[in-house]
Image (cartoon, rainbow over all chains, first blue to last red; front, side, top):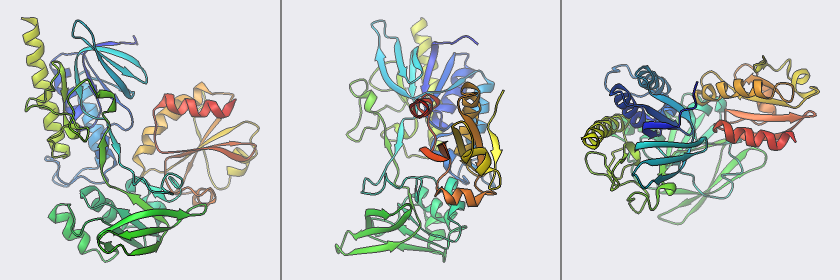
Length: 311
Length: 108
């Protein structure tokens, strides 16, 4: 197969946003490549069971959903490549060059639909014990904590889903949340509050992960009272969200102070021919289905953009 | 043609610890989706490093003893053994070029 380096559309990120955009642009007969640095499906691929994606009344595995989206995009001709975008340059003729760990890709249009990095706690011991009790993926590791004591740090939908999944295996799950209420949807909140294996520590943050070869305990801090505590356990699952990983876009497109890409409602950035879709956008509500919707919107905008250019 | 071959608690000693070549062990399980993403990359690498590095896979579900011996609490975890000792640990998924870089640093 020829090593193609020139596409009508380069899409960064193969989550719901990128795969939907790729499905639409490929179906519109635009040559399309989707770059994925980690896991096809994106964040959703790590969700055990997705209940709120329309069309699946009994829910669907997040990984399976990602695979289905990939198949559908590929069926219409999109190419999916494992590569991480490291830079984006605009040439004098307005064509774009996406620099990646697998070389450069040249294109007329870029849709940025990924580039999120899992947030870490940033406390002593965390890095040291990754894979030895510190985990960022409950669906991967929950069965390894059968009858053990674990904690989940976070309070959003993802954290609650992970805590509920862990409760199927672990002896006890402690949910550690820095606020005094959960951000998660009511349905998930009710489930977690009704799960006898899950305890919630409110207003609490982690100061340090302590262990020997494996994790042994957490040092905790109550943010309201300043009280310190120690929690003995075997595992800690960190689920405090994602940071937009848009450092490579600084000075290229307009970013908000956190690093999310600012777009209009057609998914256009301030640079013609560069669009953004999904969680990476500043006004995204960060759901799989809205990300997919963003991807479709971006693709339709791209079609109009390219048609205008040809006139 | 060489693909990662399965090892278990019973064969680990012979296939990994007593191997005459360095061995990369893929600790995985069927429930672990990222493990399924790593597998095809390892299939390719097993061909590329044929003769230099043996590739084996250990199901942490059915070979829990070996997994526990090496403190495997997250998967996918890749361990490279040289002369019966682990010399490199890689936790989680990463793109193939990055993986190759880390492996090559340990093969020299």
